Amino acid sequence: MSLIKSSYMGLPKLGFGTIWIGGRRWPVNNASYVRPGREEVTRALDTVARAGIRMIDTAHGYCDAEFELKEYFKANPGFAASSFITTKLGEWVNPDTYESVAQCSERDLYRSVMMSLHYLGRIDVLYFHKPLDQDVLANAGIRETIEWMLLNGFIMNCGLSASKAEVLETLMSRGLIWPYFVQTSYDVYSDRYDLIERLYDMGKKIVINGPSRLRKEETPEAIFKKLMANPKVHFVLTGTRHHLDENIGYCQET
Image 1 (cartoon, rainbow, N blue to C red):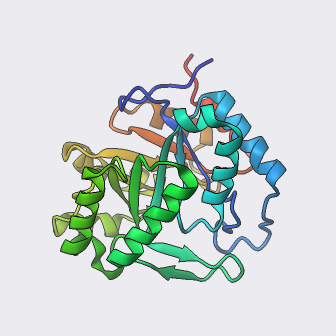
Image 2: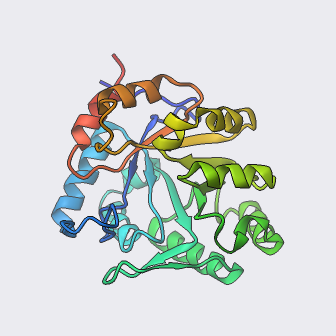
Image 3: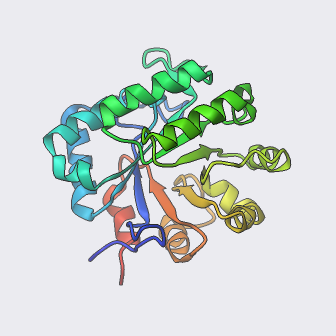
């Protein structure tokens, strides 16, 4: 069976989040996290490719995730060519200490994009990670650099990633949601659906991070099927390490 399609470019609506594949402990307090070996990463990406998933979501702040994708893309050029690749800037994480460092200057922007292009080959969406750090979306120089990168084909689209409702509210109140894509959490979708509706009415392309299995009030199946059926949600990410096949099954056409 094929995956349910998004209204955006006819891509499959389910995307794959790569936070765990490169050494980024997630959640941050997950003391039992063990970095996967190349064989486990390859198995997961093989599953993604076979299922027809094409949105691959990564980040400069996911430790070596972009490098792991580079190795897989090199071995699977057809999958690389057909993928819709999204990455983020604004944060760097030390893979040994998990210390997070904000990187939001114009120089950081250029350096991060060049590194991501080296690893990934192209960037279909570049997200701002933690968009309130250093007031990055209000920085005229940053916006000019993004517009230059869009004009010259370094990136295809721009987005922001904000997992908390109060961050989205602040950005809205200040008129700073100028990026085209907005990635947010299932918590925002569930608890503050009014923000999802406002973003949709603004013409934004909405990406929802797949829910944690710690949520007990709804089953993962019910959540994924609800998100798949909502035309205001353009993409849904699964970042699971252990339930990938299961989540794929929830997102297939019947």
